[in-house]
Amino acid sequence: MRLVEIRDLDGPNLFLLAPAIKIEWVVAPACVTADAIAALAARCEPFGVASDDLAAGRAALGEVLAEAVSGLYRRNGQPEPETVWTDLEQPGHVALAFGWARRRFALAVADIVAGVATGEIADPLAAASRLPDLLASDAPDDHPLLVRDADRRIPIVGVTGTNGKTTTTRLIAHILRQTGRRVGWSSTTGVYIQGEQVLDGDYSGPAGARRVLDEPGVDAAVLETARGGILLRGLAYESNDVGVLINVSGDHLGLQGVLTVEGLARVKAVVVRVTRAGGTAVLNADDPLVRGVAAGLRAEIVWISRDPENPTVLAHVQDGGRALIARDGRFVALRGERETPIADIADIPIAWGGLA
Image (cartoon, rainbow, N blue to C red; front, side, top):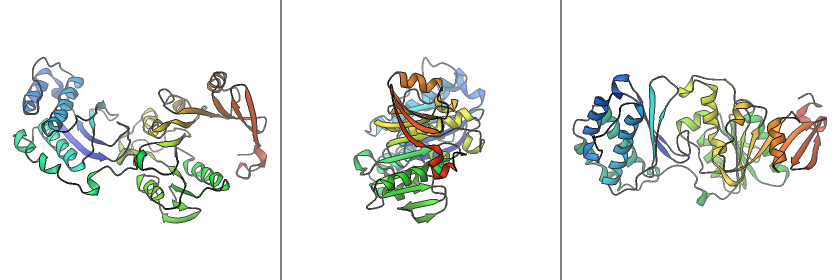
């Protein structure tokens, strides 16, 4: 096994909807034979990993490594973390992700497990002896840098997709400002508070989101969320009130290990997967990849479509759900059998007389 990286993710991410430590390896076929896995389990026995009745294959490898993480937590009197073992899109790449609450301790656990897996740590118990001291740290950065629901004071709208994120973010912020709200938003062009740019540059990641959420006096946040921030740091918050997923296309594939549009959709879906129960997930019914992430969401779904005969919309509305469609030159809101005209598209300035 070859270690690729150990990464601390401060918020919801591709693996867990909570802060996670990701350990990524490249695994050769020889590493998943029954003998290789038994040898790894034997090296992990000091952490409480059983070395008998082990099968071959990647799933068995993941079980041994996940149990090693849990064993290190148990040895130090800590609750066992949630763990996920998964194949990544790059051939031969796998990842073990586990939840964390103390950064230095969790990173050290990851270092030990990675070192034992690759054979670089010969004395696991000696390596583990320093773990108790790391739990004594109470530095602010030793805890996840995300806004917990218990500490969040304003509603959040999270916006993601491949194309149109910045425009959609600005439109939502503009609409909210017309209702009298004091709005902060972050995007690829910067961070804005009530229309004034306070940071210039690409702030579609967690740093921009935190800047908005930390601003005194703001009473609504609209946060553009790109895939880079999700993959490299995780979201800046525990949940949002509205999640918007516009579309998914093949732009920029090959970055951060995402090779397919299906994989990109899984990354983007994090924004609507964290939308709270009682919140709203706004999804593009005309995009099959967006439709594919709808199952299992805890928020109410509002479908958006330019096609008034879209089958997903028709079925959803028939069941009493909500949707917004374009029909006969108008935006129309649907809920069950009720229809509410919103506006003529030609009257909306950004639609350029209905051309856009």
